[in-house]
Image 1: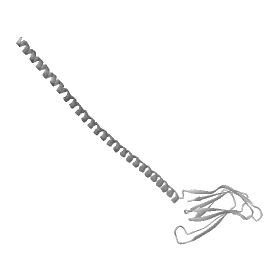
Image 2: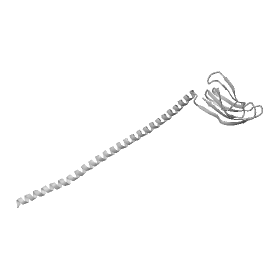
Image 3: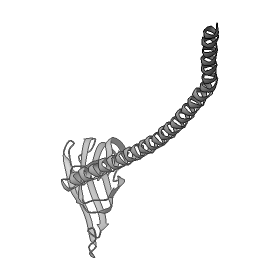
Length: 203
């Protein structure tokens, strides 16, 4: 009987010890879990801060790229403009540009009358005059101007007349920078004249 009581007492003691360990152990596990959660939350906060920083850096880089692209577009526009200017200057050196002053314009004149046009000649070149049709064989074309020949200190006066007795031919007049006057008229004594004329300035 005493042996049974002894065994029972030992079993109860063991169970008591296990219960105590169980009660004491569970809070420790909970505390460890709380610490791990706190560490994970801190790590997550740091990672979120890193993500935000990288996003800011990416936005700055994107802004820089946009700015460089805008600068590149402006430079490309400047290059295109300069290429256009170079081409225009090359055309001018070859007398490859022209301005039409009158394009088959019909004029009606009384006898001895003339009609005038003003040409603003920015560059040295030529003025071409053509009488496309006429009712008189006593027509003429005249070009006159005063120029200093560009930047020279000399003044040049030009006044040239060409008689045009038939239609279809071109009369050519050299021109220097300045304002030139082109006149087309007739030397009829009695009858008037109707003419169709074309005037071009090449430079």
